[in-house]
Image 1: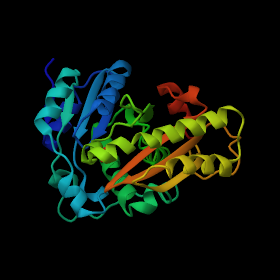
Image 2 (image 1 turned 90 degrees about the vertical axis):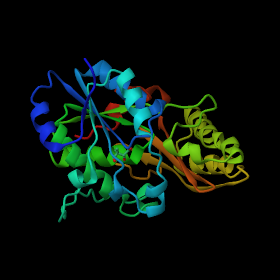
Image 3 (image 1 turned 60 degrees about the vertical axis):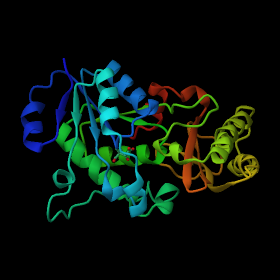
Length: 296
Ligand code: PAF
C-alpha cells in the first residue's frame, strides 16, 4: 500500500482508527540518514503499522541559530521513507503542535539535569513535551529510538514510565561510518579537518571498553584513560566524558553494576559530536539495549 501522508490533525484522528495491528512509531526531525532508516527497519520488523513523524521541534533548540540552520530535506526524506515501506508519515505544522496560547509542558527533573541537559538548557523539556504530544496522537504500541542520543532515551523512558504511557521504548544500536563515527544529521557541518579528527571519539570509547573488559572497574581510571586519548585530538574540546548507570543516568564511582554507559561529547569547531557505549559490549543489540534502558 502507498505511504499515507498526514498533515492535519482531523485527518489523523479518523485515519488512526483504520490502523491494523501493533503500531510502531519513529519520531524524527527529518534530514534522514542511515541511522533513522535503521530505526524504521527495526520498527518494520517488529510492528504492523509503521508511523514516522517529521517535525523540526522549535522548543528543543536553545539557540535560534541552530534551529534556523537545521537541515530540511523533506522531498528526499519522503522518498526514503516510501522505499522503506513506511505506512504513515506525519508532518505536523507548528500551529498543530503549539497552538495559540500553548502553556503546558512535560518536564522530567533529574535524568536530563547533567551532561547534555547542562549544555543545552531547556532542550529536554522541549523533547519530552513534543514526544508526549506525538505519543498522545499516534497511540503507539512501541516507539523506536536511537542509542546515540542516550540521555534522550533515558529521559523519555522516565517520562513514559512516570506518566503511564502505554508505549514500549525500543532502543536501536548506533549506526556508524566505516571509521566508527556515529551517524548524525550534524556531521554534514564538519569541515574536512574536523571530520578527520572525529573518529577519535569512537576510538577512545572502544579503548576504554577494552580496559573495562580486562577488569578495570574504577570509573576515575576509565575516565582518565579516555580523556588522555580524547585530548590527543588536535582541534577538539572535550565537553565531558563520564561513566553512568542505566537506566537512571547517574555517575558511578565503581563500574561494577551491569550495564554501565560511557558517555562523551567532543566539540569540533561548532559541531558537538555525541557518542556513547554500553558495557559490556555484548549488550549492544536491540534486546540488550532495550532491557538496559527499561525501568521498573
Ligand atoms: O531525536 C530527535 O530527532 C528529536 O529529539 C525527537 C525525538 C524527534 C523529538 O523532536
